[in-house]
Length: 238
Ligand code: ADP
Ligand code: UDP
Image (cartoon, rainbow, N blue to C red):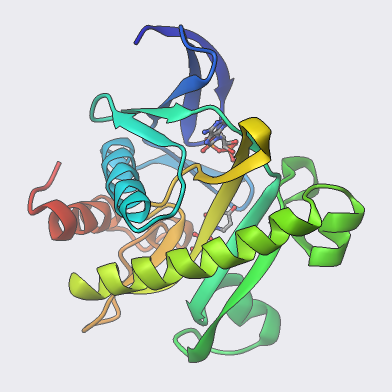
């Protein structure tokens, strides 16, 4: 597989064309941003952790019947994936209150919900990724009625699988963000990444944060936190 021109450089990843028009290579960077790009920094080794963790989780989900964009891990920082048309929605699932949920409703972090919740943000940096209702996403034709149903079902299924997996490594899956894309014939697949950048992961015993909140909140220890997730999954640090 030949790596060709860069198609896109985002905040955390670069996307490259390949000699196959249906496949792209994603390359994970150590760059970290928060608050819609206002806070910038780097987390050494983050790209390796996010690539390897994402690829591992995508393969686990695929084995459980969830269609994903993942094709093959190419290196520590690169993965070959199916090129998709990204649906411009951030799909957020929450099991425990934290982050913007806690802030918006004036509640503490750590309230365990009886049932997981779902919400959507409109993926649009100029607007600051505003929260969007399902009806508004349909009105704006960001997504079709059957697509949104499928996305909701897949997102909750993914939550069940991931929550169980993380529980097995003594980690609470607090909340996370998913992106979905369309491939040929409008088939919907899970795309983008699932990593400590896009999930809140707390140690199940101490509730210590093992995710990007350490960077967002200037807590320090982010390299160690990302490595700890890597260690619990693979038994090795990067
Ligand atoms: P951002 O665009 O928010 O800065 P990244 O740095 O992670 O985010 O950039 C990766 C970009 O690639 C994102 O916009 C994401 O939606 C997009 N993407 C993820 N998976 C695929 C895929 N399989 N095909 C095409 N684009 C993808
Ligand atoms: N999230 C993400 N990208 C975003 C916004 C949120 O990956 O652009 C993830 C975030 O890491 C967390 C979950 O989605 O796991 C819920 O985030 P929240 O709405 O609480 O927003 P935040 O506090 O991150 O601004």
